[in-house]
Image 1 (cartoon, one colour):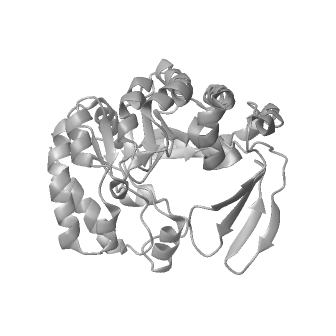
Image 2 (cartoon, helix red, strand yellow):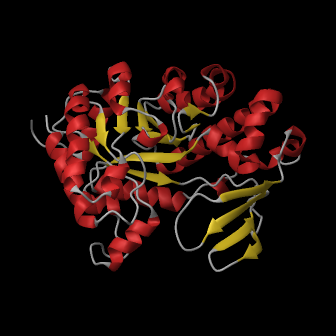
Image 3 (cartoon, rainbow, N blue to C red):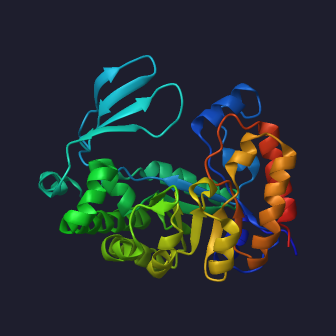
Length: 359
């Protein structure tokens, strides 16, 4: 089959139609870019996607901080961390020396009455949109024949920065009307902001939502609770994308396999990232859902940690020949690539994976 562009290949992957090979995409920690730049593999500020020839590009262009006028307040600072109160009223401890998820220390919003005091702030204010970043990323993707996606978080990932996972999950059980209201507001404003952005700068090729709805061996909530509380927001946002004929990728770390029937009902076209250490299984998910759902990820990043080609080869051989048969697979690790992975090993990984992924 003749060689395809990233746009052509990704379009066919999302439709589970034959292409010249599987697709390629990846996420990296910022530390990795810095490390590889210092060692001379990358130029300063070089785009990783263009460097490695990724088929897709994305732009994260919305700011959903509740109070846009809030100036972050540093409460405490050490040599390695900074404790900050942000515009959501959240107090988070962030590491200064390396990339990691911030520690949740405290939240101003802990129940419905606290939310009621700030809900008026969540509006479709154009200041929430980085028009320039979207415009630049869209143009660059078009110039390089990459499939371009608007990317951002959906309702679950919009709620917890305001109240934290614990208060949100307790609210789902004990104050569902609070969660229903948050889901309604965040999903409605997401669509309104997309309408503003796409009218001004043109629509993307697809939409990519980030929703970390699981942890090890379990999702954060049941499928029934997903359908009752989260799905209405997913349906609203995904239905809007589909009204524009845009396919939808949804990311979720953690074990979310029990939620897949509901996520597919909501209209997703592709699941990413299929985290192995959380209990996800690429082969099993492919066998159960691969005829209806495209898949991205599921390559255990811990094999890359080893920097051992033999170990990585075993992982690729066990998965790529199987899942490529469904024509809906993208080569991607199951988590962001850390700086401990050697550049040459990562380069070999993608070359070998794409070789196995030819059709």
